[in-house]
Image 1 (cartoon, rainbow, N blue to C red):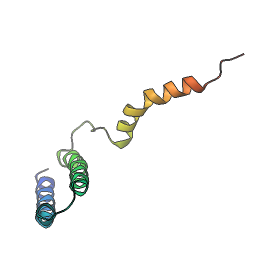
Image 2 (image 1 turned 60 degrees about the horizontal axis):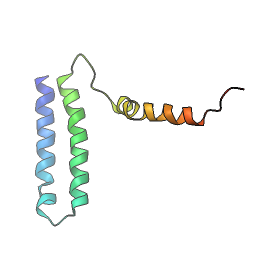
Image 3 (image 1 turned 180 degrees about the vertical axis):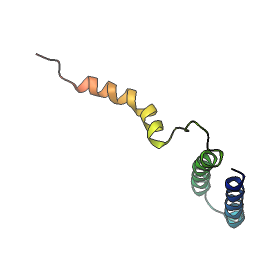
Image 4 (image 1 turned 60 degrees about the vertical axis):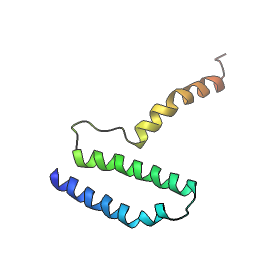
Length: 84
């Protein structure tokens, strides 16, 4: 586990050093927001990888299932014709 943390620290450290010019330049808010969102998602997966919990963090499919299942069932119920 220590090796994984060291590799991730080196990787994220080099990313932030390289992208320091992005923060100092006159880039738009949208670019900075997209960068922050992508870094947060990658950090989420990096923590999942580094810590290797015995339980799994919810992945993309589980999160989509959590968000859209109830809405999809409701729409399906609305569009289903009653049995005759």
